[in-house]
Length: 276
Image (cartoon, rainbow, N blue to C red; front, side):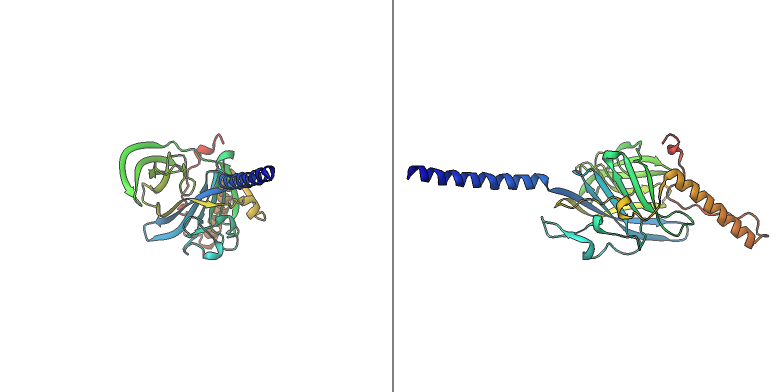
């Protein structure tokens, strides 16, 4: 009888430790990701427009995806996942296929030092996937601080592909990432703007370290029917299409003189690609 009781107790202990192990294993394996929603303001001499954007970052997967939703707000619940911590809806970019709407998307693979962009190329009907090495920014961190979304943020400045930028990052959010291609500061970038006033990203909502087991889908898989170009190939294709457009406009109006296209792209200088 004593042996029987001992065996029952042993079985209870075994079940208890198995359950404990499973819970700990699941907690360890479960990924968390953070979502930052930004307003992207584009300003020129005539007008200013605001577009909605979202950054999803996973420390465990060591990568992020930033998507520009254009003039519409972020997608509805069809493309959302529910946070287990508070029930909020978060954008599940990994399941959001925008190949029909053709909205820009940028995926940083930190472990592979790579960046893939799904974006337009001047003169091309369809979006292309653009590959480049992950840009490394020569940030200059300054002492000035302010507050954004109840977080103390610190000022930093950098030059990137034709423009000078001022960024504000939160050291208490240990995510070395930001909107668009910006990354590499010791904290999450909540605001960054070009000093010429043409471009500005400003965070308006944060969800940090939300439990989820989703897996990023690579752009090369998600949009496998789209052409893949290097940045240098994109530059060459853009230049060829611009020259074609100029010849066309001049043929329509031969007496107009030289026709020039306005360059309003966010990136205009690619000297950093010389040694790429």
